[in-house]
Image 1 (cartoon, one colour):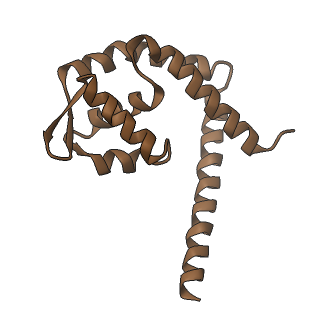
Image 2: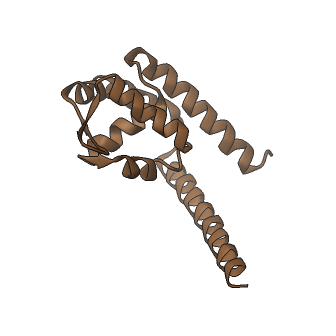
Length: 145
């Protein structure tokens, strides 16, 4: 059996590749889709909020490029310096691509019982918490030494 890190990396690449394929006809990528969703859920979000909320999904240059894409495509605008808001075109783009994303999500979990999916998510959350706590504890121990 391959270790979990192998499957995490392979799954993330497969998710990204498949989502990019699904979203490509709308001029979107997985990360641009995520930026649009953050702006939909967080009206007048700051750039820092977008970067913080999506920090686990991509590095800062990739996220910054995605924000630039959203602005360049007219899917968002700046309502104030460093504040972003979806435009009607951005909302339409989200709605148009939404059905495809829902079908993608259903396909990605095909044959996986709901309880197995929930268990997998809980295990990954716990592993992440364990490792982040250890990193924080190690950093605190190093700083106090």
